[in-house]
Length: 303
Image (cartoon, rainbow, N blue to C red; front, top):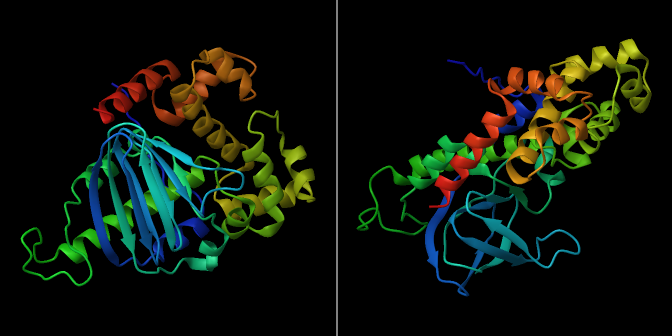
């Protein structure tokens, strides 16, 4: 029987940013949409949408450049750091929850550097315990709603606000760990001098990086770079690179039909055996077993 040890994110800056989140729930709405049915939502503050089942397309001004829509499948979560207006079109029967907040404060003004929307793919696979919390958010409470409404209970507002804060914090961490963070966010998480090296690691995790090469990217000496990276990020540059590779590998194993050998090669490993050993140290299980279990959880989440 193997035991998987879960480690906290290494970045003190990220810890401080998440600890400073202060959300107040404005409302949560659970909806079932028939194929072809659409739903328009407008929130003055942040919010998130989680898809329990089916497929929906998001349309709105917050979409990335040149994107006419963003498709969300069962198990996906999208977070809007700021106010937003969106339309959700179900391309097949879908069930989702839409949650809105009052404005929140985020340490180091990091919220200002976040994109208009953050998509966390396969959130159900990455954070099944959070999905259970989302499923339990049977809160009909909204601003202006009477405490005695049929579907509300005393304390709903506070409890649901805290649940939602936990969900968003976890989604932000997953989004950051998946390498989706833009340069501005990385500059807030680490020293500006390290941003170039961090971006390079995230953009090209399969490159055969060495400490000397990363130090050159950061325009520092080898010893100074290693010391500053450890102090700012909380682990060695090569340790961080390994973690980025393993998180990238998870996505490749889950969403592609690539062989384990191909995944290993694409992430800079000279042998499948070396990759498998690193993956097992990171996750507590083998790549093949992780792929089978993750796909099984994803299938269950779509039922």
